[in-house]
Image (tube, rainbow, N blue to C red; front, side, top):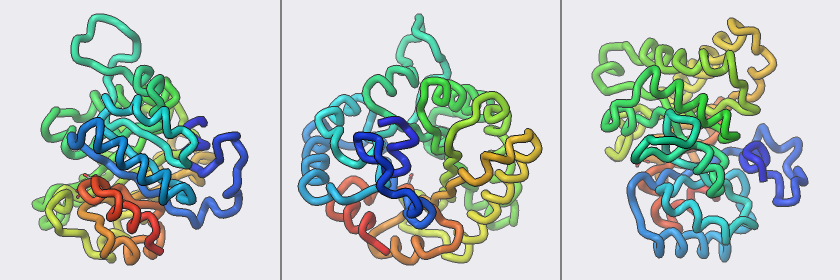
Amino acid sequence: MNEYAAFCGYDVNGVDYFDGLRNVMKLILGNWKMNGRHQDVEQFLTQLSDHGAHLTQIGLAFPSPYLALTRAFSRLNCSFGAQSVSVFEHDGAFTGEVSAAMLADLGATWTLIGHSERRQYAKETGEVLVNQARAAYRAGLNVVFCVGEHLAERQSGGHFSCIEAQLSELVAVWAEEMPKEIVIAYEPIWAIGTGLTASLEEVEEMLSFVKRTTRAALKNINKEDACDSIRALYGGSVKKDNASALLKLDGLDGLLVGGASLKFDEFYAICLAR
Ligand code: PGA
């Protein structure tokens, strides 16, 4: 399954059963962060095969050592992703690095780039993110680019300029490498893992800003054709109790779920929310 098929709900034989529904189907991605063990991943995937075989448009980013386990579950209509990739594209003397090509080799079809925890703890900003995104696209991985403001930025009214600056990081990459689908996840930092969610109005307003800004950036680099491929997701304390209200928002194309993706029942309930 290629990365586009995986995102768009093609079946394993490449048949697009969801043609025409694409615009109304929401993408639900789970980010396990640095959690779980071999057994937890296998148990989750077994539960997903037993109960969630009908689900489409879902994706999971387990810690990368466990990506290889997903091979046994390749018939699931679920895509697998990485949480970050190396800036280095080619094999070589880069101790500790894991390349996008290696992750693709293990079955990843997409990767998160720019998650606030990477920006904060691994100090990944600007040039690093650009190089990671370029490496990911070149290895055939789609990129779920994460953007989000700190609470102080939101409170001082600087949230739009903060998101605009983060989005502009990727434009240089798109000028060289155009993915089939542009996926942006808006995750206000103050809502990640805190139990606080942005209000529905705040999410709707920001997703519309993200799409407008991305479209304008694409026009500037003469890539207007890609405007229809933009998907905007929300992440930050998504739970089964707030998923359905979020999924009804105009302009929201899916959810990026952290803590609540660790338990199968909770994640499954989010996938079923309408
Ligand atoms: P959370 O994390 O759902 O635990 O808030 C979201 C994320 O970091 O992607």
